[in-house]
Image (tube, rainbow, N blue to C red; front, side):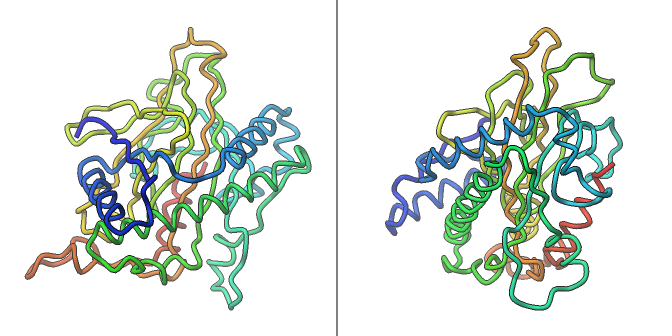
Length: 323
């Protein structure tokens, strides 16, 4: 596949339609690991409010943004200044820092149980909300809630696509440690360093990502199996979905966690190359064991990957990318 397919979710909750949609998802996840979903059911008001309030946040002076800056390297939530992250490091590759800044939040609620030390310190670290704009927090919280509900619907379809009971993943995503990040890519004022991108080539770490993109020069590219980099489509009223490393491990590489990047725009693009995206990174429960699914292991074969736990895997990957 050398394109990213668009899949209409409008017929969901009908058993035959669910199976048909799941089959399309299975094909996309095997071939390229990316798809675009339309008729997803998320309120346009929730989307536009979150988008506008994040733009308002990034439009503020740097001193205002720095009021909620990450308090130390490796802290997962708050404002990450320009060139704070190098995503290619998650693959063990060295490259110049990424030309983006971001504002991230984690889970909105802590589980009613005793947390492990690393779990409490990393995943359930306090979110850092700015005083200005005051409307950012409610808008972001509404968006995160909507994304969590959409991710659960997608995980149900994933289970059907993988010939599993449709509720198979539920016990492993009932305390998700998901995060949501608004990424801001300012217009370029100076030529980038050789090899520098807006976001270096990387794969995502968890189960799936829901991306709300922006159609500007210098956008998202996905690497096809041929090695060719293809532009991801930006279609109004849709989300881009991709699977992450843990889903690839779960499926024994039946589904592919695909390299992607955000390229730099031409210098002459000027102000029109300013870009923002909002990415919801769905991550199974901290303690979820990611082991090869029974439907993805042919008789007599051994799994390609040893079991890992969702939380520690995420923490190791994340901390490897931070400056």
